[in-house]
Length: 243
Image 1 (cartoon, rainbow, N blue to C red):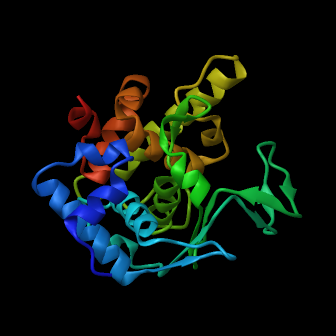
Image 2: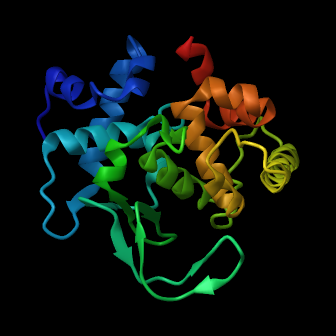
């Protein structure tokens, strides 16, 4: 895809997070987004018509988390499937009460352990700092966080640690934060992130990642230790850039 700077800028103009990256970082983000498009197969689901602008925006969202990590962190998948609206899945799933269900359900996104990333374009468009019941939402970041998580022992909320990070500290801090979130929910207190994070450890990491990029100041204030570890993992400090 031959893409001019103006075309890329136009495609991401309505995503406020992109404004955080300026100068050399913005050039790097554009470069890695174009390389993402060159390496991946971005294909429509059903009869949805994907435009170049949609692909550029989606690729940019996907590349923000790995901007400082490198595109090779996404080498373990090839395809991104995009539906116009939430799509129907017949895969078994576990509800919040721990019961495994069969049958169909509507999904806004999905990441398969040995397969594609699947997204709803309507959900991509709804990304924002307060777009899901007043909390941060970004289905692209969410599903790509699952893909990063899957690089070590499957989706369990513990992606590969960098050499200067301590896995024990990650487990301790994330587990304690998740337990506090459950306790706050049981006590009827308002939660700082979307309650989908309560589903399991993998969803907690993915929802925290959404907040880290879409509403970093909120996450830093509500869960400073989680925010600190995400800064170490993603090699970024978005709350500083947002001020």
